Length: 258
Image (cartoon, rainbow, N blue to C red):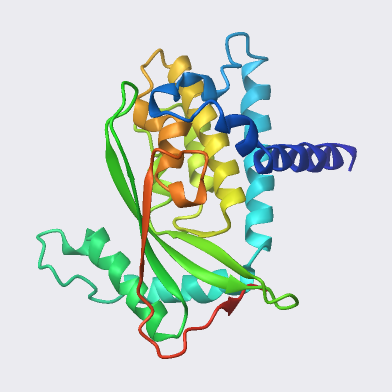
């Protein structure tokens, strides 16, 4: 029980720090050139015992995921059911040779069904410029507007249909692969849990590559990963985030999250 309380306290502090990190980082990332490897928290030059490190990261990730699953469970169940329904259908309309893996059509069909159910839905795209550290790029994801049962406050929930695959590394160590296997196939939730997961996974990826004596690609660094969902990460002002309001119903609703 004492160990569980310690873990709970550790996760609480960890997530609380993420909530307050934007202000302290803002001055440093005012220009894209200023994004550097320093945000990867270079704390592994003198790591503790290897087994202890990986066990602690697994415990931390599992605790974050428990909180993630407990938050907005009603919305996640409804949206998850829609995603599975679309996944089982002939969703591709572009006649691609790999139509069963057509992410673009899959995403648009999910958006269409959500909208037809009367849920306020936005198709979002993040774009970022090339710097000395990263190539330019873009990423598309879905946003739905939820509300709480008591306050009716509107809350944006991010939907990433290809979430677990974002962290796959073919030659990573077994312990890192175990962390990846814990991740949900798709993400449906609030920004703070996404940020916490990305931070843990990117730190673990760096550790794994160091153990394997392999180079960590810049696209696997935390700064780059978070730019994919930049409208949920205002720490990166050089990114451009646009939203297309796609709710087709006459009276869109903000679904209740709990």
